[in-house]
Length: 291
Image (cartoon, rainbow, N blue to C red; front, side):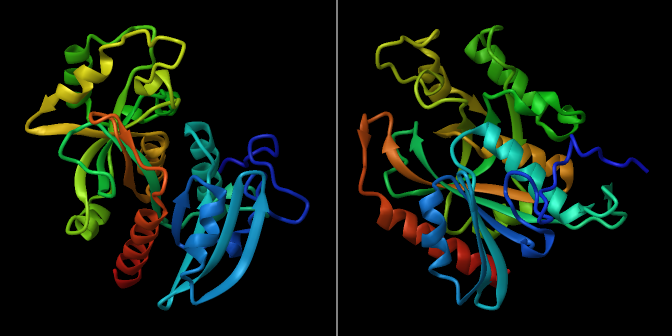
């Protein structure tokens, strides 16, 4: 059995994992992921009890209980790289023996639900709607670095998308990865089903043009009109593909739900979106507590 070197899995002197600063006993099996560190306090305000509160850099964590169910809420910050850190370290907390540095024989399955904000690319999806990313599209290339990538991705839609858009060979190869089916079924009555692009940036990777023109100024038009067996791409965000992909490779349940705060077709955005986010959080916690 492989012993993981200290350079590959860094454990702090207090027994916590390197970036998250969490110890294994501080992690619940159900984890809410949010981008904004300030949103952790909002989610935790719904908890009936709080047992720990840990912060390091952009990674803020509170573990507590909601309606009798133990949950952890963790902020990841912005971007795919932070999801690589967060999901890998969460898995290590659950499935690596820190004393022996070996993977445990009996694996624990985590439920990882990202609650984020997003911009819609279809005219009928309104600001304030909740989109469940049944499929996430990685424009980031992260999953391509991991063995087994093709076994968890939908290669047929991948090929169709690249052909339709005339995908630029200078860009990372996109990957299409499905959310956990059980979580999709749990939330399908309170969300809009979507195919969500996770972009590696906020501006040109999402087709925005401030001073620097995107390499393909018509890419968003092709994204909006892409159709695969009656399914369409619905929205942009920046983290969901890595979450879904890494979780699938590790054997965890994962999904992303986003509140729409911008309508890219109508060229409209809402900066006072906190009431929508609060309603999404309440809905998600109630669903998870009852499942």
